[in-house]
Each structure stands twice: as C-alpha cells, then as structure tokens.
Length: 350
Image (cartoon, rainbow, N blue to C red; front, side, top):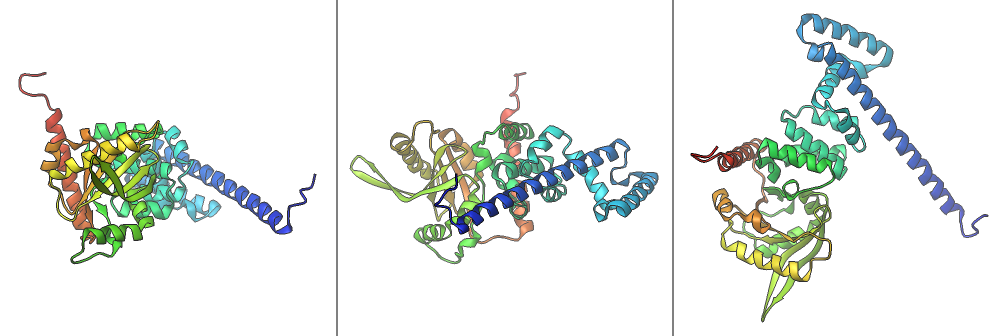
C-alpha cells in the first residue's frame, strides 16, 4: 500500500541512502577481499623465502615475478609492493586475528602499520583502530603523536601488554589502554602566564578536540561539579563518563607540579561520586589529576592505582618530536625497570 505521506523529495533521499549504503558495503567487501589476497600472496612469498628479495637469486625471482604481474595486473604488484605483502604476512601471521581487524581496517591502514618496528605498538594501534574505528588520517595522527608511548599500557612488561591486548580483542577495555601521560594540549593556544580558570575555559572552548586527544569513549558531563559534604561545598573541575570503562572520570586541573596532598582531595571527590552519582551496573569512579609536571618516584610510592587515581602531565607547548620521543622512551624504560625489580624474587625466595 502506498504511503500517501511520502513526498518525492523524501523518497529520493531514502533511495539515495540505500544506494550509498550498498556502495559502501561493496567497497568494504572489495577491500577485505583484496587485503586477504595480499596477505596470501605475502604468505606464499614467505614460504619460498622471497621476503625482501633475500639473496641475489631470490631478488631475481622476485623482480621477474613483479614484472610479469605488473604487465598483467598493473602497478599494484611491483617489486616493492610484493615485498610489502610479504612483510604484511610476516607481521600479521594469524589469519583469524586479521579477519577481525578487516572489519574496520583497510589496506591503507595496514600500510601505515607496517613500518612500525615495535610489534606491541603495531598490535596496539591495529586493535585500537578496530575498536575506535579510526580513519586512515586519524591513525596517522595517533602514530605521529606517539599515542602508544604515552599510554599507561606501554609502561608495563611485554607479558602484561600482551595480556591487555588480548583482553581488548575480547571486547574489554582497561584503564591502562585509556589513560595517557602526557596529554598533548598544544591546540588550546595557551602560552606564557595563565590561570587555572584560563586552562579550564580553553578546554571547554576546544572540547571537541580535547575529547579526540583523550580518546574515543569519553563523554563530557559537567564543569565545576558541586559536591556538598557536611557544611562545605567542593567543586570538581571537570567530570566525564567513559562508555567502554562504564565509569565516571573525575578530572582535576593543576597549574603546578603534582603534590601528594592532591590525592586527598581527589579521594574525597571519588567517594562522593561513588555514593551519589554512580549508577547501577557502573564501575567505581576513577580520578585523573592533570598537572604541569609530576615526579615519577612520588607517584609510584603513593600507589595511586589502588585508589583508582591517575596522575598525568599536560603539555600546552610541544617540544620537538625527537625530544618528546626520547623522553617517552626513557620513561617507558624506567617504568619497566621498576616493574622488573618489584616482581623479581627477593633473596632467599625461589
């Protein structure tokens, strides 16, 4: 029966949407099919020990093969393209995991992942790209912004990182995957002397970009959240909710470096939120103290993770990329060394 309320314009819009959806599905299926084909070609080349044209004889075979394939199928099968396919199969050996990644990642995503030397970083970006549905541009920005090195996850041992990534594949996200240090807030346009109110106002003004830096899953709830405790009122700078963690995230902004006294204030906020704002089915609230700086030893001694509190630095002016990279790598090495000392057996113990 014809719907008399349908107008020509609405009918056109509906049919247009159906066509666009069909095109999207076809493009997605085509990309997945081609990417799997590239993976299988790479796997076959690996079986013949032709990855990267190993040895003079192997180079000749690969060059001849590339020439013949290019003549028949075009530039997508050049010598460099074939070595890339072999590297692809080498770096992503599990076809079942690859099939899961292909639900969201395209061949262009994988091309960005292949040059990464750290297998754990590569796996992190691939899984986060799948979960958060990053575009190719977004993935490039995350890699350039050294997201993996800034996550709490990267400070753990390789074994713990692999366990966390396996948890992510099972559909569960942990705080170590969510929180970063430092947060890059150079887009706020702050320089010279500024107040805590200036910092908060800039964050609110650039909230869309702030949420992109914080990561997918964060939803803004409130600013200056009022909490009445006895006869006193307290005000939390920013309150967020994280959909994947299913918990409230309390954020306090500090212009100075982290002080141990900051934790007492955050503990009060978290207990109030747990009592008055936590909804059924949610996890306990978690706190993030954003400071101009933090002493790693002080933070470690306070054992804040057991109190559901994270401490991170924010940067409103970025150092050169190589300086930031070196700083992050030193922080990762230092954190992993501390972890190794903590888990090592003490004298007289097996």
